[in-house]
Image 1: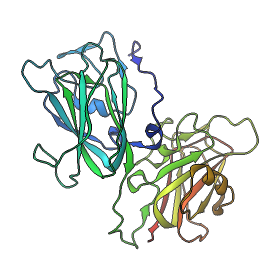
Image 2 (image 1 turned 60 degrees about the vertical axis):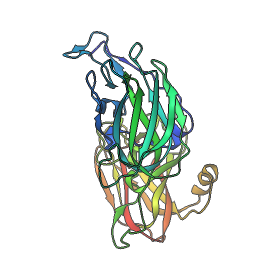
Image 3 (image 1 turned 90 degrees about the horizontal axis):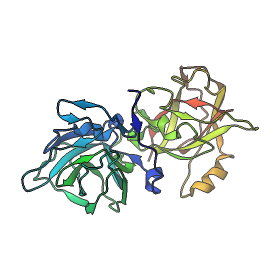
Image 4 (image 1 turned 120 degrees about the vertical axis):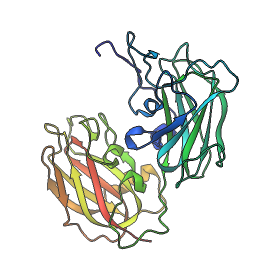
Length: 338
């Protein structure tokens, strides 16, 4: 609709930049159920896009709202819902986003978590409080850090006593249990589900490098890493960490939807890195050995490269985008090594 109003991006605390939103519905997070969803279904709350407001939009239940909204409670108690995270992970912080909920936001909310990889948790499950009941305001972001180091699979969001939540964003680090990994199995060691992550980059004007590690092919040009048009010598780059040290066997570079703005070429450097800081990695990466020699790229296509240098186990790669442009996905298939 042409009269839509979209909530503006808000600069959050550091955990919003370090962590991945594990309550992202596009990654597979799922709204499993709630005490009530009369005005707006809970799955909307897991939409990764900013909340949207349509001033004149109504449906059979009343005003259409972009989020989860319960009816006005006329009894004691409060509403709550259960969310399955997109992937198990340790959590760094949460954003209770009440964008566009002004006269219908909950006065308070709290957050619990549990680890239940095999079954859907219920009231008898072992729930742990991550955020105690905290006051909310209307049409606002509420950022709260989480200090737990445990791995969680599900969340239970409580709102007191009722009302609407535009977005629930829960930032964390995906966890994979590598103790039983088959050393002969070939995996995408860069995949978010396997613990791959972004570390540093030269530019991310149109999209951050982490997008390249998402599952499936990109849905549009916004679902990838894209830099601004480079107006100076050199090339753009990003440093990515593997979910586990491994031997690289094959690399895929997908430029889906990038047609007039894909990189002309790419190359990849790699290294096995122990303890290090982000800034030292940026400096060191310039001198890493070449894993993939410079290769031409084409528009809107999957490029497969298996002529890789034998560098032994690696933990990080530096992807060089020459000279600039957009890449939808990068996959590094290989075997995890202990």
